[in-house]
Image (cartoon, helix red, strand yellow):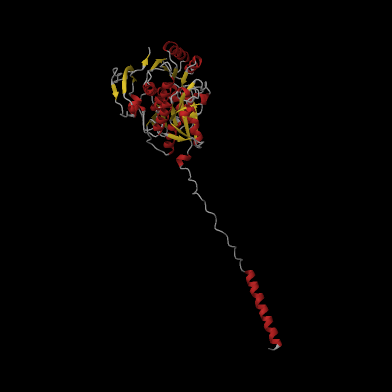
Length: 431
């Protein structure tokens, strides 16, 4: 090839290469290959509904003081637990509210944002019914003593405390050595009679298992909180009736004081008095029962959040109903409890050696059955009238020996809450 032609071809090829390089540099650079964006392993959290996001104020009107009481103390604890569980719920309270103050306080709290207003005793909760129509967007709640009147936004409730009281009765029946157990009680009422009946049936079942003869003595003080009268009654039961187990259906600490002074066993009510308040110790308190009002309040709050205009208006939850607290604790409506322990573990370590295995096993069995809704002392046993109790309008106390309900028949919630007006046969109701 001619040398000049050869050089011309070389220069031509070099020029084409430079042109290609220039074109390549001016083109957009290709992106490096990247892995796809990571997908969330869980679906995004559901956004709160309008009702759930709405600010709710649970307002409880307490008939008594809160501090140092088991009844109002338990309601107060319930309000605080509900507020801790739901970020959009606040809890406010009024103490020592009588019937004349229930409505004015309720309207004051409603004006300040209350959506749910509770009267924690029937006598001062019933007046709330009179303003229910005036505030259709507010839930009103009252504890049941025997009246069952409701409105679409006027809810009535009470826990099946008698189930835990039955378990207490089993323990008390096993512990008594004299065969005499005393109840310092407030006054005859359906609520009081029903709770005493649960305890009494437990005592009698223990007596049957252990082949004991046990008498339960009841004496009334006349009201819920009469410390001196309660003390006098407790002392009389011990000194004159040979009682070596005391319990109460009143609200002061006097019966516990007497039990401690006399060196006998005490059975607590409404709250774990040792674990919650540090009252006495398990050297005196054999067991208590704890009422978790928050289980019912929880359902009421959820109904309100859902915007339900026709919530359940008669609520009677038992040991088979429960809720999960903010800290993850699962708790039943009522349970036996002592010094922070529940179930058979709640029985005082000092009392435990005096309770036969048959009773320990029975307490465990019946508790588990009631937790599952498989057994109930009021269904299991017959209701035979003692001939004592409280005459209601149109419903006198049945004559002594009358079988009002046969064994194995489940009484209705309505009957238990409003018509159980007689003591069970064999109870010694003192004048």
